[in-house]
Length: 421
Image (tube, rainbow, N blue to C red; front, top):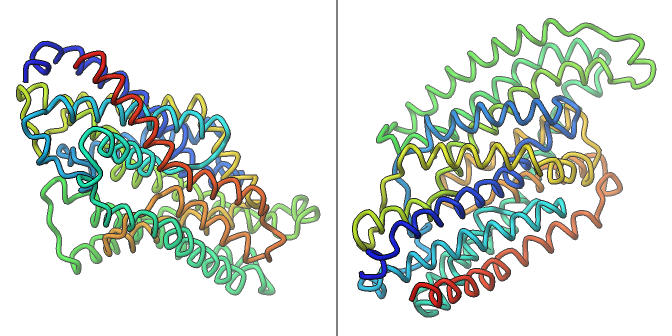
């Protein structure tokens, strides 16, 4: 308790610095994943992606991110053994933030789309094993996370593959692809509004104590989807045939129909990410602030002050603006060639998979789903359409995320313990 009293202010300052650094990493990597398909398909520019993320990540965090977050991350550790030594948890959360932040910086500089959730999970497991003991780790939860490496990208890939086939069947392989694109476009836009509304209601609004029945959630999502579909119909109707572009590429005008549709998916993915992951990124920061303010009490839940959310939002936008382009390039151009229609399928598939996962409680990663969805879109054109070497590098970066986060966190944990203990 004395350590908390004496060094409390220093711990909070360190938590703010490390937490902002971690959120910078989330922006550079996780948000870049959400935006990569939109940028890579040519629907929006990098600058537009940054502006959309700035607006909709903040909106998602404030409207649906919630003001309470679990500080003991997703039941990964049992805090009972350290109830009388709260400084252990403070050292651990600081070490986890710094370790995850460093790994995200390295991965982003290489253009590897890794999972920020798994980075922080690996870091927390590392400090728990080093500082509390192996028995304090909830290994059942870790095995679920490992299983999700296979399940979530596969599910995202299958949905993207099926969506791409539906667009081929309904639009691209018909006698009048442009007319059919304008006919079916609003239906696909409706799907975006409907699915993202479901994501928010299933995952985000529970923090606001806004409990909705499944039927009510579906009805509300249907209404929101219909409104978005009407706006999409207005925008799509403004698209005209470009005969010159069609001479170079037969489906140029058709792809132009999908460009305004991609704006909806970009905004929707940023909002969904903000509502689900921003608070998670600053969870350890909230834990440190809570322990210091309570004088050393280790609680399972901690209030998430408004300034912490603002800090997280700023860090995320700066991360996307400064280094996000590297990961956006990998997702958007290196795995397979994306057009607006392919990018649309990948983004919608990723959002759909998040909905399914949130209902089943499967611990999935937005990153893994996004990559799987892009691969699925590529496979719709055959295995030769995807770069297997790039995919191999991405999968390797996923596998090493947990152990690297763990080792770094253990090192920083003992360093902090040595300095302050």
